Length: 545
Image (cartoon, rainbow, N blue to C red):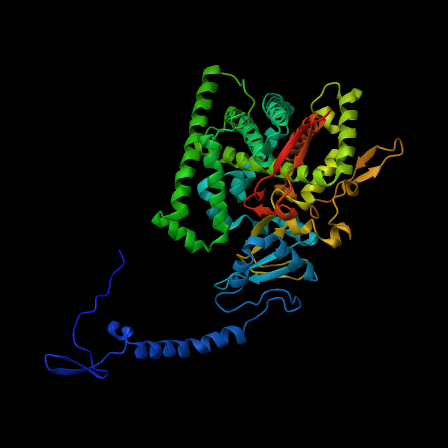
């Protein structure tokens, strides 16, 4: 309850003295009762303003720009740094940083955040190679990143550094390179397509109803990754579009954890310590996620001990069967893979289908390739062999992720002082962010037509036919959509397998038509831990003849 100031009903007080027991006492101008006298109140305001005036003059007169050659960068003020500009542009930070990077001669700049903290932002491939490969040991996730996501991810592979990361990477790499896991992924994806996604799209086409295709793809992705990671089916993609408890809790945990990055550390840590606001809710949903995951781990350990043999081939069963039975270890690592596979492919596919609707020529070329792949002799076995032939579709997906990467930015923290290849100085503890979204929009990397959605930039035409192409990839430091260097994404090939299977199955039967947005506006990309399309992707689905 707010304290109330009650003024006694006594005679008017003299402007110079007040009488207590007949003893005159000088009136204290800072006594609370003085605030209720207009003249004194104005005097206090004037006094406060005169005290603040030199400070304000100092802030604006002696503000410094850490990049004097880059005039578009916001001014940095003592103590508060560039926080006013960061806050002003926080809803459009991706395009704003992209504009700032374009104006920098080296496509790199340094910003003062606040309280003396600085960070580097880059879209320079040589700098990306330096932090992700050349000087990899010096650039880690760092304490800031790890503590921000520790409640959700624990010590899982995507929140680990040093020997812990090396061990998890080695264990995971072995499992991801097995043919049996790839076959299992194919089976899961095909079952989810034939039993759930295609029937839902067919029903929508028959009823001419509107679907949020982003939501549908997220549900598809969540069912897939849960079956691949846990061997558990959450039944999230059903005709009723249910609110599966685990899925809803996971989604909320990811969003609140992501929001922590927009706040100063002391702010969210204080809220967590007091158990208030979003931190109170985060504690609840993280508890749901981790308790659910622990329950699955215990059940899986029991099933494996009773069967005395490996009957299922999901990642959790593989880790447990290979001797990694520590409950926290396998829970953390599987939650990390769930996060990685849950929204990345759905985000990529959401923007892909929207771009196809804006580029019918590309859609027609993909349709032609799908029909050829389905009827070719090499596709007789289906699955991986079929999608391997879909070179143009592969290029179209790469081009889509160039413009709308599933993870728009990533950062590393310097363990020691360093100098980047472009001459930028990095102090110990500073973060260096490589801006994947901006890199896909750099003329220096992609040419003057960078804004055009053109899959052909990834292809070379072969002599044996007018429609025969050879895929020509870009180096991973110019296109770090799947990271690069020692931390490059283990699930890259499986992600392409899943996406191409979805594209083939959907486009073969349906045309996906996005609803026009108000005023003809283009959709906006929202950046959490992964990217999302603001407002979803409302579509109508048309059955092809």
